[in-house]
Image (cartoon, rainbow over all chains, first blue to last red; front, side, top):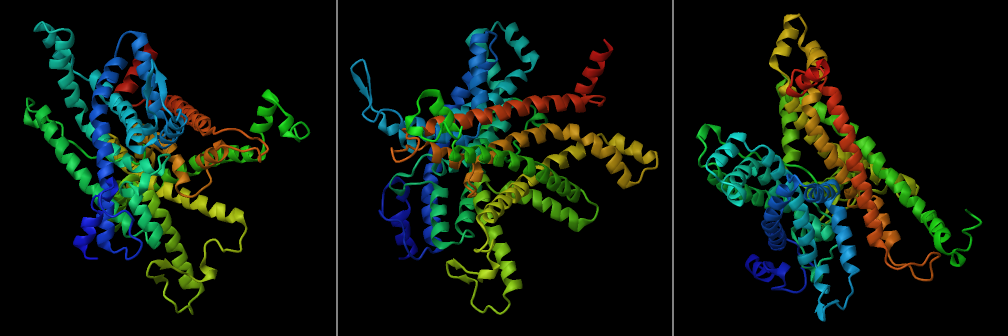
Length: 275
Length: 294
C-alpha cells in the first residue's frame, strides 16, 4: 500500500468512513501518522463542543457563585467543588456506569418515549462529562476574574446609569473575560489534553472508532514499540496546542484592544498534568 | 464474623451487608486504598526532592548543571499529560532490562530489538519470572512511584524555581552584608523564606497529584479503580454474594473518597499558609500583624 492509498483508506477511519478493518501488518510510519491523525478528529470534536457549551455554563456558574443569595450561591459552589475536587477519570467511569443503568427501552414521560441508548456512546456521554468538567474549572477562573474587576469600572458604569443586564453585558463581562483570558486559554489546552482520557475510561470505542491515543495504544500494543506512536500523538497535540494558543491569542487581542499596549496581559502557556 | 459469614446464602439484610463488605475481595479493595495513600505518601516527598534538586540545578552557577536542570523542567512540561505516563513506564522498563541484559548476558548474540519485539535474556527480566507474585507487584508499584516522581518533580521544580526568585533580593543582599557565604545565604535565608511563595503552586500540585492517582490503573497496578470494576460487576448465583451490577455505587464511593481527600487537603493547606504567612513581609503577613496588634 502506498502512502496515498493508506491516506484514502484510513484518513476518516475514526468516523467510520473508509477501510473497516484496522491495519494488521506493516505498521509503517505512514499508517501510524494517518490513523492517529484520524483519531484526532474525535479529540477536536470533544474539545470544541465541550468548550463551546462550557463557556456559557461557566459564565452562569461564576455569576451564580458570586450571587448574594445563599440558595443560588451554594449549589454553584457545590457543583464546582464536586467537579474540580474529583478526578476526571472517576467522573467518566461513574457517568458511564450510571448511564448504562438507564432503562434500555427508553423512559416514558407523558406518553413520549425518550431514547436512552445513545447516551452511553462516547460521543454523547463523554461529551457531557467533559462539558460539566470544563464548566466547573472555567467557572472558578471566571469567578476569580469577576472578583478582580476594578471598582472604578463599576463606579463608571453606575455613573453612566447602566444597571442590571446592560451593566453586566457592557462592563462586567468584557472585563471579566479580559482578566480571565490567559487562564482560560490554559484551561482550554488542558481540556483538549483531557479528551485523550475518554476511551481509556468507561466509554468503549464503538467499532474501533477511537481517538488519537486509542489508535496510538493500538499500535503500541501491536508493535511492542512505544517510541513511535506516542511521540506522534505528542506531536499532534503540540500542533493542536499551538493552534489553540494562536486562536485564543486573537481573541485576547480583541479583548485587550482598548488597553494601552504596555499594560496588556500576555498569554503564557502554563501546562498542568492531569485534571 | 467467621462463623456468621460461613454460609452467606442464608443471610439477609444488614448482616448480609456486613459480611459482604468484609469478605476477602473487599479487604483487598481496602488495601488498594492504602496503596493509593502509600503512593501519595511516597510520591509527594520524592517529587518534592526531585523538584528541589531540579530548581537548585536550574539556578546553579555551574553551567552544565544549569542546562540539565532547565532541560528537565522544559522536557516534562512540554509533553502532553497522559501520553507521558503511558510512554514512560514502558520506556523505563525496557531501559532497565536492556542495561541488565548488557551486564548479565554479555555472550548473548541475538539482537534485542527484533523488528517489533523486545527480547532480553531470561536472567535480565525484571523481575525474574521465577520470583514470587509480590515482587512483581512491588516492581510495578515502584515504577509507578518513579514515574509520578519524575513528572511531578518537574512541575515542583518549576514552582520552586519561581519561588526562589520571588524572595526579595534585599534579603539576600542583607545576608551577604552580614558576611554570609553564597551557600549560607541560600540555606539560611532563601530556603526558609521561599516556602511561602512556593505554597500556592505546591498546593495546586498536590491537588493534581491526588487527582492523578487513579492513573495507577493505567500503569497496570491493581488499584482502587481496578477493584471497583471487579467487585461492582454483576455476580451470578455461582458466587457467594450474588448481586446485580453495582459498579455505579462503587464509583460513587470512589468519588466521595476523592472529594474527602480534596476537602481535607484544602483545610490543611489553608492552615499551613496561615502558619507560613506569619512574620512575612507580604500583604498577608502585614494583615496578620495588624490583626494581632488590634
